Amino acid sequence: MREDRLRWSLLSLYCIRGFFFTFTVFTMDDIIRRTREFVLTHVHASGVHGIDHWDRVYENGQELITPKVKPLVVGLFAYLHDSCRLNDGRDTEHGRRAADYISTLRDTLLKDVSDGDIQLLKTACRLHTGTVSTGNPTIDACFDADRLDLWRVGVIPAPGRMATEKGREIAIKTFYQ
Image (cartoon, rainbow, N blue to C red; front, side, top):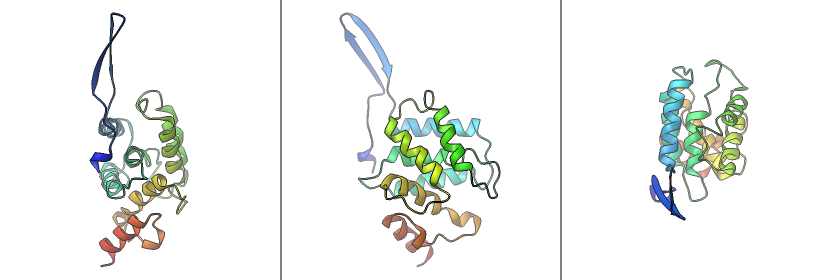
């Protein structure tokens, strides 16, 4: 799916009326990599909801990408959806807190992300623990990327609880065949 990813030049030089301007525009992969590095150093992560889980959610998300799914949102979701957990137990408000946290990162870490993608990301984080499906392909791919990693806590992902057709197919193939 890499061919579907956004590609920009890393460093561009422009001349307008004799003035030279340089600016950096990051690729989608750069934005996700920066986010991963940021949460590693700024977020207290536990074993069950830490970097191993986030990396698996990222990999699951890559499997769920379709032409209607925004890969940047799915990638960012992997590293931010559990960033505000208070514990590894029942913490029903962690998704809402993660969405609020994303707002605080808007002008720094996430400055290169479009407003529309930020809204999708915040919605996915806010709803990921209590909503089965939204009908939005990107948000639903985020949900399934997380659910496909439930095995780590002893729960086999149920195909009927997947929000996407691809998620159902992966759950059946991985856990029921």
